[in-house]
Image 1 (cartoon, rainbow, N blue to C red):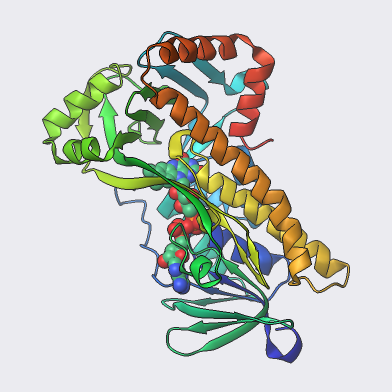
Image 2 (image 1 turned 90 degrees about the vertical axis):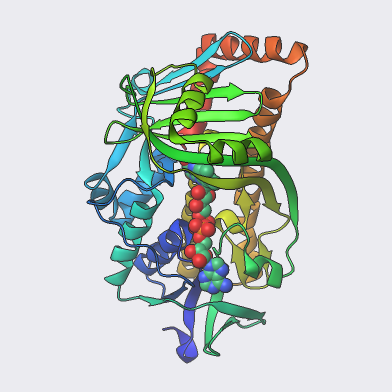
Length: 395
Ligand SMILES: Cc1cc2nc3c(=O)[nH]c(=O)nc-3n(C[C@H](O)[C@H](O)[C@H](O)COP(=O)(O)OP(=O)(O)OC[C@H]3O[C@@H](n4cnc5c(N)ncnc54)[C@H](O)[C@@H]3O)c2cc1C
């Protein structure tokens, strides 16, 4: 604890972003408390693969190596993807990325959300500078010139120099702090399931753009694929209600049978899709990170990766301020983080939004343009490398 028994930082929300940040700050020598409302579901190698998976980019791997959790994740259950293929249902052309073109072994890794959280929480449990309060809910936040206080639902008060709200897309704290958002409902839901296909997935992340939304097949370690099928709300409801045989037949056709017939499938789940960008990240000594700050379309698997870039940036900014002997929780310090991350997150979100709109459009001219676009991008090696670098987190 620092002066007057107060903490250095309070992190609210123990999802992947809050847990990574809490662990990182503790490793950086800060005394922190992590407050999480719900205990994470335990992850076991003997359980079936989680329906929620994430495509981790190279810089997320670097962060995990830095936190000392990569070996645990990679040694558990992880599917590298070495290639990416993107094509369109309404026009010719295909975009192809290959890790070997950049001299790399993989473009990224498909990992279960539950495994990421499990590895981070296990490491946090052994971290003397981290205090984990769970189940515990933050009910209110008070910022003042000297520090910030969090009041838990049971009345406990915590005080720190800085508070990070990593409390997810709904972020009750963002609302409590009076931070508004730009918000757009895609009127889509992403249907997810794990499926086995007649042909191997070739360690390739596949994505087909359909008029209703993109359909991705992500390669799992056990040879199956995790599908993320973005559909207009009513279509998603219909697809969720299909029996297994009808679902597999429709899914195979929607995917152009690129990996042959769908031979088995797990139960399905669905998630509503929004674009949501906080108009500012800082209120007094409180700051937003992860989905609390930005929610993007999942079409390029960027949401959590952007959050890990928030983590890396916020750690650097707080560390630098502390090492210079400054007040690391002061609003002007937090605004350095805001300036850097808000612009990059907004750029990524609007880029994904533009792609979603382009491929979602159904006027007669647009399919020709978008097919030409994919074919053109595929031929323009330098542009493609920039695309690949951004996707791999090397921007
Ligand atoms: C279908 C789909 C596919 C996706 N695929 C990818 C992908 O391939 N790659 C990628 O990078 N991203 C992907 N994403 C996005 C990614 O899942 C999210 O960006 C990420 O999970 C956000 O993590 P988080 O820690 O910010 O929030 P969350 O995981 O929502 O965690 C927030 C936590 O805060 C807790 N909390 C809330 N309020 C309080 C409170 N008052 N007190 C205490 N605790 C509180 C909650 O219990 C929760 O545990 C996808 C999203 C969807 C919907």
